[in-house]
Amino acid sequence: METRSKAENAKSLSSKPGKVYLLGAGPGDPGLLTLKAKQCIQEADVVIYDYLANPVFLEYASEGAEIIYVGKKGGDHTVSQEGINALIIQKAVNGLTVARLKGGDPFIFGRGGEEAQELISAGVLFEVVPGVTSAISVPAYAGIPLTHRDYTATVAFVTGHEDPTKEKSNIHWDKLATAAGTLVFLMGIGNIAKIAKKLVSCGRSPQTPAAVIRRGTMNDQRTLTGTLENIAERTKKAQIRPPAIIVVGDVVTLREELNWFETKPLFGKRIVVTRAREQASGFLKELASLGAECIQFPTIRVIPPESWKALDKAINKLSSYEWILFTSPNGVKFFVERLHFHGKDVRELKGIKIGAIGPKTAEKWYQWGITPDLIPEEYRAEAIVEAFRKMGATPGKILLPRAAKAREVLPEDLKKMGFEVDVVPAYQTVKPDQDTAMVAEMFREGRIDMVTFTSSSTVTNFLDMLDHHDPSLRNTLTSATMACIGPITAKTAKENGLEVDLTPTEYTIDSLTDAILEYYEKR
View 1 (cartoon, rainbow, N blue to C red):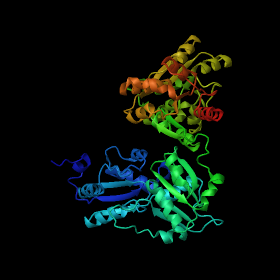
View 2 (view 1 turned 90 degrees about the horizontal axis):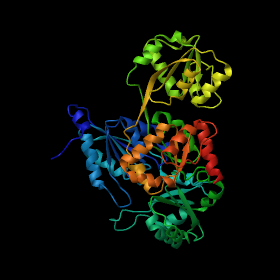
View 3 (view 1 turned 135 degrees about the vertical axis):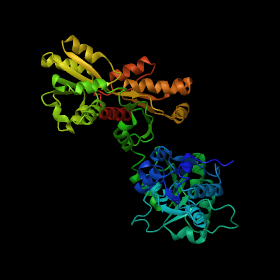
View 4 (view 1 turned 180 degrees about the vertical axis):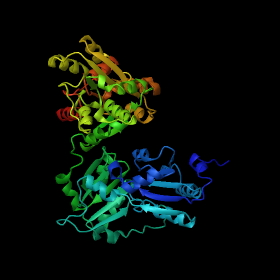
């Protein structure tokens, strides 16, 4: 009996016709997805994707979208091409918007043309959204320009894997071998020996430089160079497997000078970021710019407190406080949002001193035109207490909007100094509903180089999530470097049996990034 997805049921009463977007997902680097492709994924009811389309893009899909994997990996197809065609048509005929996500560009050896013909035959509306093809992007990431005025003004793209059902090849090797200065073969690793032999037999010099680039634009990109005479042998010896492309031509020699991607300081490092998703973007971006592959694995989610009662009560009597202390950017965010909820704004803070535990927390206040009165030299709770002692602050009333669960050091020490402290929950952190399977598999295979922790809760939640998936995973963590943002986080990690390898001198994300860079540079 045929079943229908939630999206199909939701649209069953709609007369609006479905539509298919044939999207090019690019070569793999998430930054190379086009803005239009991202928009189409966000608006789609169904996302149908291939092996070569980076799964990261699925995060752009709406919460209710149906996600369907159809394989297409080097002859091992989860769904046949005919089955894919039928699936796309079925979803569109049922009135759904379909994002058909294909690696590279759909019309460059991607069989997008065939899918488009099937859609036309079925009377289904469609659009093609071009993608950044691996034919040009992968050589660029390997430091190989396909054209160069000192080397060649011509380039040709060739499939290295023709339709096996064809009676004979429609590649005119006798003309191709010498017609273009640069030749780029896609999907040709399995036939590399035949390709090299054909080119040489048809007039190309056996000493012509050649390169094989595997997993191009990705953190584990691997480039092998040689000549037509030896590239097949070298590829076999190095056990290079698909996906990979082959570049033939004198421009390959420029790689030695122009190799910019594989020389990044964190290239080849796979780093797990456990910070909350909404706060991790800057950290992820910086690590990625240094060449790391970042695995976003948020172990905390920041949400409103169970009740606003305590914070609302404090807001209604703000004028009674001499100080308001903030220990995180989240505290500022939720406090200001709650002010606005009550029809108030930062003018309510007139005459009240503001304390911020670190530069990121202070930055939140700068955005509102307020310069905090206190930013301790060391970015932890104990430093605020010490700063109060040094300034000889007169005991008064302090408001401390913070996480529902937090260390009691700050309020307790302030009370000992004679201050009256109102601790109110402004937000809470919870474990997200996170799929652990992928990260678990990477740990088992020893493919994680580092795990970063930015708070004690990221440590405990991380371990809880792994233990819930498989308690034996703890034994695999010793192969990864553990990086903690500060001593409190490091202490929690050690108490839970982790060996902490690095902690920055300043307890900020920027300093943690610098410490990671320095750690690998020394190694």
